[in-house]
Image (cartoon, rainbow, N blue to C red; front, top):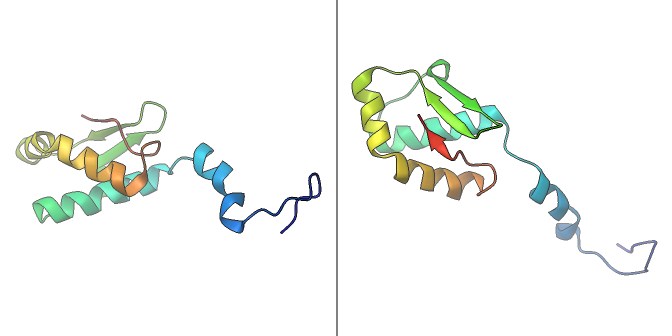
Length: 97
């Protein structure tokens, strides 16, 4: 594909590079990814109604019973690392509360 301005050839994979840098994962994708990771670690499924995600502060809030929430918070660093790998640095949550 040629650029009309400079006559340069641009590869197709580079056309979407701008969007990769500017776009973030939607709230539902972050919650679903969190559910998958916690399902792998804890072997239990968390209802998405018990999870909320604030895209502005990039914070996952859990509305769960005490023991389960405590276990998740103990594994918080590992979960956040897995979310960064799955969603990318810009889209992953920074905090779990």
